[in-house]
Length: 437
Image (cartoon, rainbow, N blue to C red; front, side, top):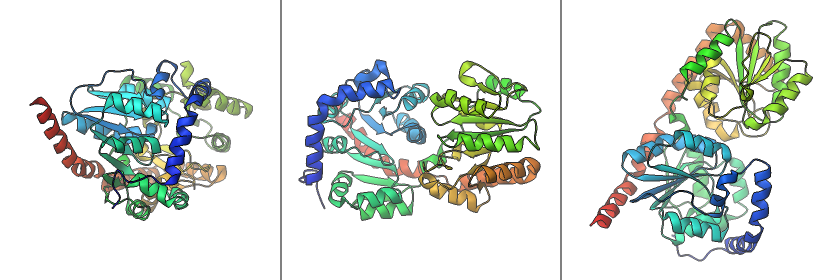
């Protein structure tokens, strides 16, 4: 079995050399991303590995997830780690996930942006934070970060590991590269048997199937005062939601709304785009379709004259799912791979989705199979499915109940993950005691 000290394959050596040479270009890259709203200006130094918070004393568990979805999935795990007395460093790479971390991380957990995968930045980050255990969520595998952590003998574990068929085929062209990365991990905790087979074929030596942590996330919080205001504003109206939508989907949703209003003249369609900053652009699409639109980011409410209500804000999806009994999950009519439906299911929604759900294929297969979700292909079928559930509320309620039972049955990944991590937590306790002595 390869060891941590094993010589790197040529591809990784070349990557590290090129990355080191490219460090001088980092200011231009960060400035470009900052102008596009993809970086936090006041915290840009974190992307260079410069800390903006003190390292908490004692054992430190570092958890890295790429974006909002990964961060949300491991929030219950972070809480379990804190309950065991260990401090947590959570890193992500997006502005939206940083905002969410600021709201939801418990005391004893700090958020930082992950540094760019350039050797000087990674070294600065690791030398300052000195994590005792590193948990990487799903599939965000940055070579310099992984190799540098291995060189410092930091135990690394993949949690909620995911390997799509597309990624698997791509990595098969670089077998030595991915094997060199995966063999640096002490353990890979993966979501499904398919993921286990793919990770195994790519060289991961120690794999355990623990299930999908996203099935164990608690229901999103719902502000009682805000939902009361929204319920009053929409009282007596039929409301449907399109959540986490991507470019190209809003036109189909707006088209479906126009068709539906022929038979349901009081219909209100709520659109919550995956990237809230797209709100004004979506409003332009609705206006061009001669529909009246309101934007939540401007403090507007959906009065009786509004056709399309844009929920272009952060951290309020719980309100969206509570508001409507029918939810179309975005990222699925376009080739994005789908978005996580679990949060909507846990707040009682009946789910519609398009054909492109590869990122959550197992979940959607289960939901479709148990009658907890329905499949649409375009604006026409979306219109038909929504109309059917508006007319037949018992059928819609049966679908929502079936989805809830399905999600409850598939849960348990959090307990299995914590159990697999327990030996590493025990080692941290031993190290802490030795340090105190």
